[in-house]
Image 1 (cartoon, rainbow, N blue to C red):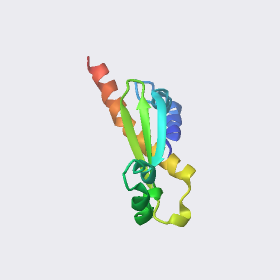
Image 2: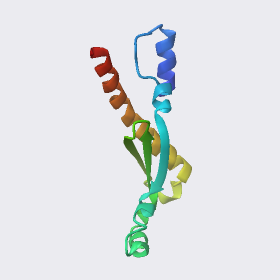
Image 3: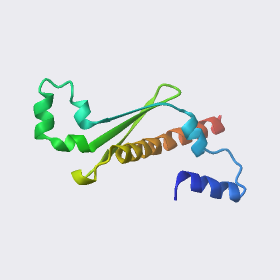
Length: 116
């Protein structure tokens, strides 16, 4: 069940107390960057050798999300079979993993505000 599906169920049940929503999570994301581990070693003095000796680096995708307050969260996606690697799918999975890390942070902030 996706975050949006859960939100629909919450609304359908008339739950109206303050909560973190998928729309809120998306609204605080102000930037995103994607790269593979192979891209990440590009500044290594022997980058060509490193990537050639470790082709799996091209199968590891990272997503960095910048939030409104300047904080960043990361997500990753590793592909086991090179034949299945697809950059778009890797980026989607890495982004979803990064977004999941925002939920507890925003939940904590909401709880803090409610307790004050």
